[in-house]
Structures are given as structure tokens and as C-alpha cells.
Image (cartoon, rainbow, N blue to C red; front, side, top):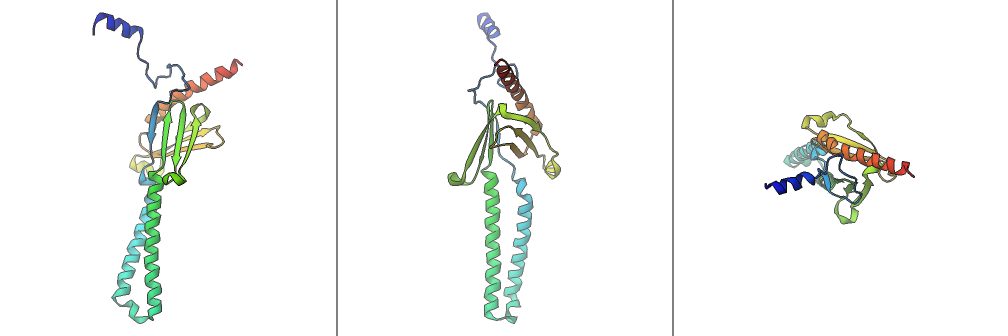
Length: 198
């Protein structure tokens, strides 16, 4: 780097977007973090329906292997259709649970928190909350999710539509907190100073 360029760089240092000393800009929508919950949140449901599928499969095999011979054709149809119906319900339930988590996404910018939930555009709902509306940041115990390196971050807000924003089943929660905490504090102090001058 030439001497002139070096002097210019020192005179106009590039600001770090995550630095708390960076001036507040309320139209800055630079993404700080975005992500979706892990499918681990569905682990209980997947295990339950996996056991149901296994039991239904064994039952269907045993039924067709000779158990149905002891009953009338009507009962045979009722049992067979019931097992197939249970399998269909199970598949739909697992698919719905998977897609619900897959389509849930949280985006945090320097000024807003966006929550998007819902399968397809017909049912999709998007909610926005100003970062300055966040009243508290909590890190509850990870519980069983901690075994998979996952945890949940809870943001309490003054927004009537989003009093609680739960960013669930994510990795590196502490890193996320360290990213948003300086920004939140800066916005909070700036907002307090602004209204305090009025």
C-alpha cells in the first residue's frame, strides 16, 4: 500500500457493522444472522411415528399371514383399511412436522427481526419487530437439545404482535448473542437519548 493510500485509510477507517461504536442508522438492513430450527425439534414425533409404522407393519404381516382367516371378510377389510389409514395419517403427520420446521426462518438485521412461518405462500406469515423494541434477551437451559449442540434464544419485546420471539434449536447461540447484544444496546441507548431530549 502506498503512503498516500495508507494515510487515507487511517483517516477514513472502515467501520465494523457489528461494532457498538458504529453510528446508528435506522435504514440499515444489513443481515447480522439468519437461520432455521434444526429438525431435532421433531425427534420425539419422528420416533413416535417410527414405532407406530413398525407396529403397523408387523401387525399387517401377521394379519395377512393367517390371523385374518379366523374372522369374517368384513372384519378383514376393517382391520386392513384401519392399518393402511394409520400409515397414511402417520406419513402426513411426519411430512407436516418436517415442512413446518423447514419453512420456519428468522432473519436478524441491524434494525429488525423478521420471523417467517407457514407452508407455501398461502399459509405463510411474516412478522417484523424493531430491534429497539426488544426488552430482554434470555438464554434458557438447552435441556435435551444440548446433547446435539443445540439451544434456544428467547427475545422478549414490547411488540404486541411478537411479545416473545423464540429462536429455537440453533447452534452457536452464544455467538449469536455476542453479535446482537452490542447492536441492541446501541439502539436502546440511542432511542433513550432521543426521547430523553424531547
